Image (cartoon, rainbow, N blue to C red; front, side, top):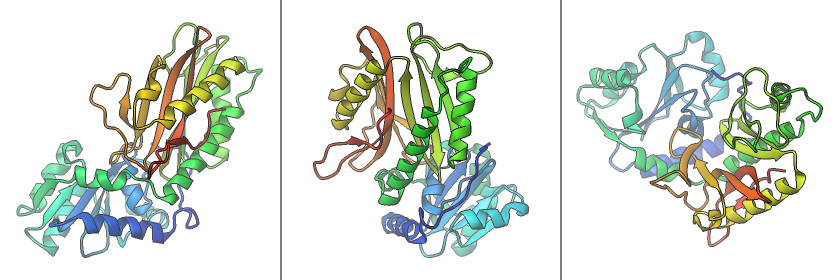
Length: 347
């Protein structure tokens, strides 16, 4: 469940932006009569990109007919109807515990044998798939992940601005890490509090408490003392857009060198060549519904390099002067021959 404030800003995400995204999807639907996109609190990126809707909990289906306005079928009670209408742009919100059954009945009512593309069909909960088939026996349900991925991959100016805002929140929050804290728990609490005060919908802080012993990032629970060098990663959501910012603390010289190497490595994306000097590295981005899905990295066998214009978050580990140093930040891949660049450095 989300813990921060979810609201919509017409200045940051105008109706015109969402209308343009919907128009792009409709233009690419071909012979499909409608598209269905699933959402829950961990797989919100597809529906939020099209409507602005981000669920605190539960699940929903966005039904996007080619020739009708989009409708949101939610497994949330009627008491949150006004909140959903304030935070999203859809023609109608339908409340039901069986969202697949209701969505199928709606589609079959418009056209009994409609061709319906489902984004991430393979990942749709089995109960919803069964209800879709039960509610519309003649509906032709097909996989539409590739179609949506092509459209979702390239960031528009509004999404870039939201990512930059999320990155700014993460950077300011990490800067509030108290130097005199008694332990990592106190540091994490200060970072989370600052991020929420700055408007983050959500923030998760992971730590590598002592880089001399272990480079792995983990959630901190209970007492944990930081080593001479430790790393903190802030994963921040703002208006449906997620980024990661990763910084090493304890040695300014190593941190600055890592940030410089990160920027250089990112400049070569989508090529992997810039990461040749990394002990490990990871590039994450949005394919369909998960906001930070692994795309390529030192431990990913089947890479899915992001296209020009994509927003990604990059994490790296460098050995600097014999010391493991972590660095990471969101980046934007260039278009028309331009190099990729960091939205904000990790320092």
